[in-house]
Image 1 (cartoon, rainbow, N blue to C red):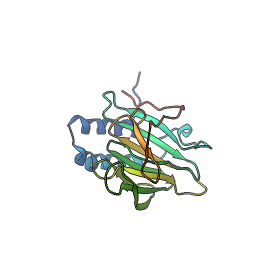
Image 2: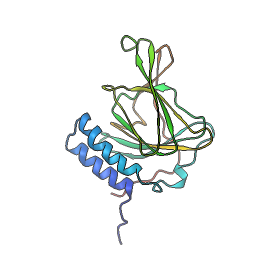
Image 3: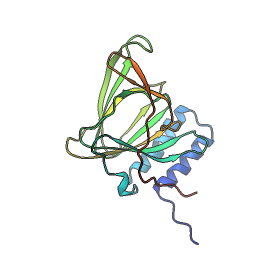
Length: 194
């Protein structure tokens, strides 16, 4: 039996796993991992069509890979027109790379101290190939939405843990936090080759 040729996701997971195996700190993950993610999102056509379809009611998060030791996860987010997240945090480092479409990111921070009112920060758009970084150490609170009024956007997310089980917070404009966990969509999930 012939082994299949590794695809872009397989290669990314293998190389990113090696980076984490080396004990890379957050700065190295952002530097070297960002280059790996840039390589992955520079290629299109590797996600199955089922993972590119938007849900009419809400954005979807598809689990693509979770490190067996829980050190990182890779997911795809699919946004239909007008869809977006609430203001939320991550509690771990993360990288967001746009594969298709455009995303709008609105950053927030606490005005005086954690738990205090939120203040709006930078607002920017990400185009295909762009990568955004989040972390409690550099800024972890944002709201993201599809910037296309009539199209689908798809982004690839890499987090320092399994984002589908991490307890995080949603925020209202006053900074009041409500706990939540982001569930993965119940859909076809590609599994990288061993």
